[in-house]
Image 1 (cartoon, rainbow, N blue to C red):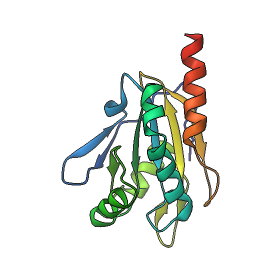
Image 2 (cartoon, rainbow, N blue to C red; image 1 turned 90 degrees about the vertical axis):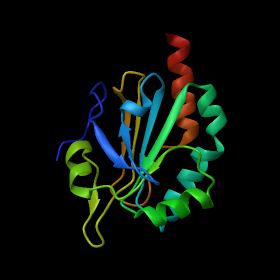
Image 3 (cartoon, helix red, strand yellow; image 1 turned 90 degrees about the horizontal axis):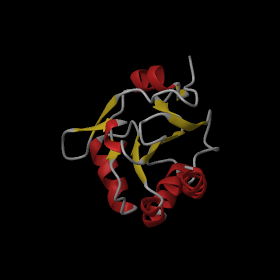
Image 4 (cartoon, rainbow, N blue to C red; image 1 turned 30 degrees about the horizontal axis):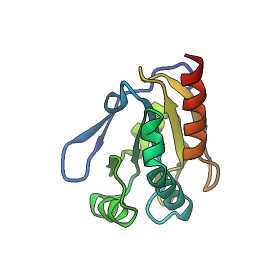
Length: 158
């Protein structure tokens, strides 16, 4: 399996959206610094903390010119409950195809039960990878403060 490298264009993914339609990644993030969060599932306390952290930092992320999208293998009902529980205001997709996402992004997977391990990407406004964070287990993930710091630094150098 090949991991995505800095400078590569993020691959095109269409993740089912709660309520219908799809979330086109990275197209929905273009023009902003994009954050793509692949989380293990609603049952994962580390994922809950990560999603909540990005929501709490939402205003500062927006001020820095960043948009966030997240998804997992959870079904639509579970994902809707996660959005409601954490009052998530960024798009959260559901029912991700483990094999397809892993093949395109290099995300680690878990076999039984089948899910994607936590993987995070920071993209430039054209959809190129600036930073990729791959976790092979429950810990080690992209955090909002790091994204804000990196985007602020990059914008100061532009």
